Image 1 (cartoon, rainbow, N blue to C red):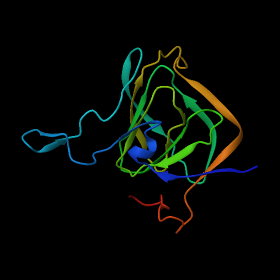
Image 2 (spheres, helix red, strand yellow; image 1 turned 90 degrees about the horizontal axis):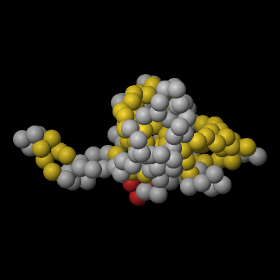
Image 3 (spheres, one colour; image 1 turned 180 degrees about the vertical axis):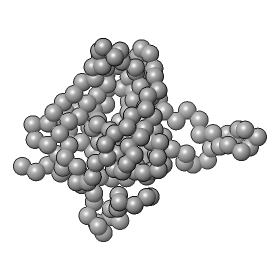
Length: 177
């Protein structure tokens, strides 16, 4: 049985149930640095039990269609991903293990903050380098699973881009945004 999820563009409204979209959109909250820097203030609900850390992840890029076999969640805290590049990446989320996951593609100028306990796919860059700054609970190196629950689907999902012309949202991930 083929189970298919069609990607959608990432927007704050569509993603609100799962977390926060991190982007410089709309009017800034204030101007700082002598008026040379727009501050988009407090864009994420960081909710972490224990020690918070900022790590750097380097993930292997994937392509669409993507085979989704594994999701995970972090019960002790939120997890924010900020790309250190200008390429879109794939974000897969689910309300629970029985729900059909949703798949979002960032604009290339967006990050996400996944709320505490949200089921999500693994970090899935669509281009090299898959370099990200990640803000989350820092696990002890001798117990890296202390804030991690994983689930493998009995039947995997296939994540695809929208059909060209279906709604004008199909994206060519082979070029820069």
